[in-house]
Image (cartoon, rainbow, N blue to C red; front, top):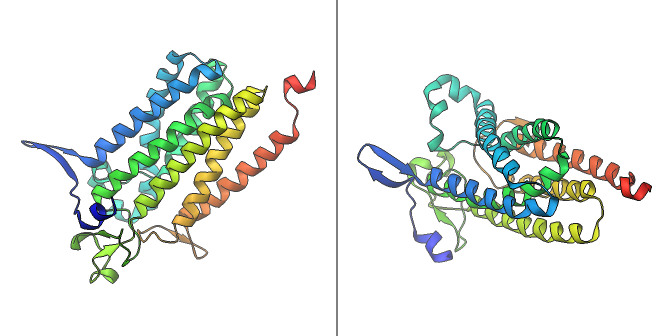
Length: 275
């Protein structure tokens, strides 16, 4: 794997069928979505949720998640898109911000849970592990687009970046930190933690609501911590506020909010514990 990453020069197009191009980015996004839905369906029965509900929810999460991720990315890069408005629709070139997808997903989950009278955290808990694994898969689309890498490195797993994709200050360097790989591996670890946590809590906790809150908040906190530290080596453009990259600020806010909700959940007895 290390030798492959160090020697291989990825190209964005997977297959060309005449005037139609199929991109690696799109392929990995679709693969990530399918995998996430499969994992969620497997977990649904543990929370006594019908799989038909998950299929319905998945449709809205896919549409809303992509729109939210794209909209959030456009806001972060607003000067560029004001200059090149037609690039807004070129989603195959990359440009999906996970924080936008998470925000949209939470809103959709909230309305869906209220409409179908299903506990919000119970729904979120069965989605979180698949989401983490989907992120681990989807980051490989960034690799083929050569859009998520860190500063130059001499490490044996450094990846080559084409001249056109290098920032001007690093134009003379050839190999860069594979930031996409670090995040992919981090998300894979989060997936494993959530899966083990899921089965542990379902086995030993009597309250589905509390178990769901633990899993959901653990995902939000763990991913935000991962993203916070990865931002130190990411060199892609993003708004800076008070000396911090904007995704770091968003991650800190998510961690704080998750801890507040988790502490409140821990100190509030469940319905069964009240009896």
